[in-house]
Length: 204
Image 1 (cartoon, rainbow, N blue to C red):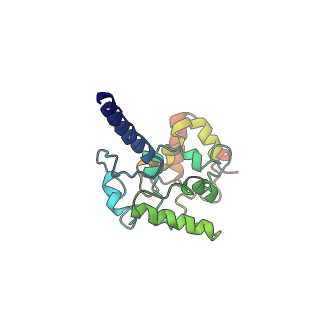
Image 2 (cartoon, rainbow, N blue to C red):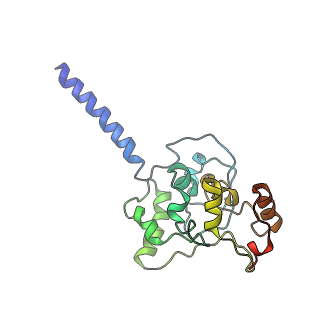
Image 3 (cartoon, one colour):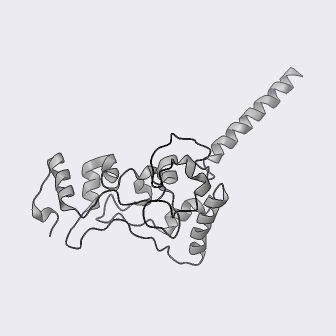
């Protein structure tokens, strides 16, 4: 009898652990993983945003056709920047992630709550209609400036993205942290790292 009870208890514990692990792969939200509060786009922490996940009007940055939560993807799930922006390491442009990349996850992951499900359904609808998502670009450099992403990613290593784009892993909606069109800002970065400041490095 004792052995049977022990097996039942052990089975219940194992089931609970499995459910907890699987929740990480089915769209667990920040409401389940509490983090210390800190300033974000709307002055709220990532956990506090759960109830307003589908409302991006109060966040910094331009409103996107789909509220892609960088703080969930890059922050909570620690997906590296180059998993989605895969051309940044070998091309001048970082590229907008293809819909195939998004749907590689979201064919299966539908979201754990109604707010996330609503945004994911927009992606799926666009995929089924074979229509691209018209993302609003955040960062621009002037046409006479050449900024080869692959060279900066290679030279600056793991912190390359955050150096220019800020701590994206804590942004519910991405905004422009640094004025990438300010030549003085770029020159200061080159001075700090003791790399070329020759005009032809960027203007050619």
